[in-house]
Image 1 (cartoon, rainbow, N blue to C red):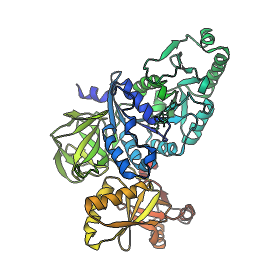
Image 2 (image 1 turned 90 degrees about the vertical axis):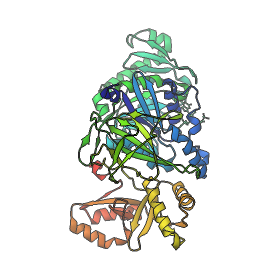
Image 3 (image 1 turned 45 degrees about the horizontal axis):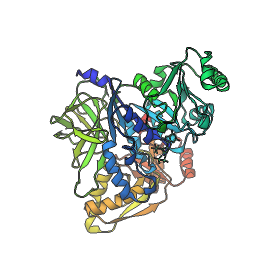
Image 4 (image 1 turned 180 degrees about the horizontal axis):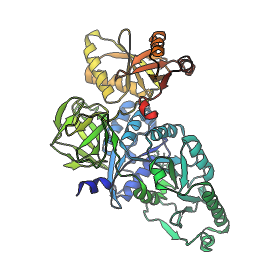
Length: 530
Ligand code: G4P
């Protein structure tokens, strides 16, 4: 296949949602449509179960299983679709943020009864920052939820994005009759059915057609006509470019568990979603049409099973064709490496591949050469712009309990940080190690792994910080004053960037007031924020 053709047909995206909105169910239905799985339940079994929150080994076991479904590839309507899985569990939010750097677009699932929930807001912040195109799927229309117009208002207000409905629900809950497809002028009639794939679609020449009253009843038909008029009055006509620029999110309504509205979503996705996009490196913008291979590592999965101590680095291909057993340049290490067993991920199976194209994600077996953010090229010395870190929520100081094992501890914690398990901030004097995470679980993971994999003995002492803020300044003198005054609250991150560890929102606000020429960023991607 020609290189450009192979690239053009790829669609790499992530599905994001607040836990329980229906991400797993929707993923599964998309895979069923794509023929990648034959039975429902295949994806579901890999889901990190809510009940297991206190047992991280159980979660790790499940995460282990879910490596195979980290990327799910299938062909549909002439497109090669790669779904990148994002962990729903809140403690793994950082994993999700990083995965979002490897996708070209996103489908956001919203529960029609709960509307926009906390985790959705944070995930959308990342999409906005990166201008990622988003399609919204409002799920569970077979249940009573908020009014459709209220939901759209809430989406716009809380997610700071404009929306444009492309389908419109007729009733909801017990009265849910289906959706009207605004663009195809067709009715898609709902029947609760968890297994069927075909949908019951009726074309309507225009909404004044009396057939509409016969099919859905007079009152609902009148209501639908009024609502459609309102939509035309309130929302601009859909324009693909405003979607691609991340300014407007098209909205669909449906019920994933009933397989309803999913086909429309997938068909429209194939039509409008972006093909693989370029990425910025420190020297140039790299376009997918560029035939020189390049890619970056956005995720590393370590196997906790002591019998299989391998790691898999997930590499997103940005440009060129990747070939098995060919030498590529690991830019950070300045070393050429080849990969005899690169894998692709096809739903439940991992298989060795001979080549891969821009937009694809491949798994590289790793014995410790990779860190998150590493770049591979055909020899060019360039690094893809950093994968952002977000301020952790929980901070604890790592204390060594066995001075004879300090080397092991040092090596272990550095490797875990490279894998992205947590963030590390070094404080002076004394080289104190402050570990920051999104959830409590990570501390258990780190402790366990330091003991079992590195033979280190340590403990964590809680530190009462509210946020870690990366600092930039337009005034060197003010920065020097700040550093003198706040030396006890300053640290360096893994890339030696200066970070302010603020104890309370009030103290952060005070620092902002007292040092107006300094900017305090809650993400390390401050260059992207501008
Ligand atoms: P998540 O990955 O976003 O966390 O959500 P998931 O798909 O697991 O869905 C959460 C729950 O919502 C599941 O129920 C699922 O069956 C249900 N669900 C998904 N889509 C719909 C829908 O369109 N309508 C309705 N009524 N429910 C939906 P559960 O009880 O947690 O699991 P299960 O026992 O049904 O598997």
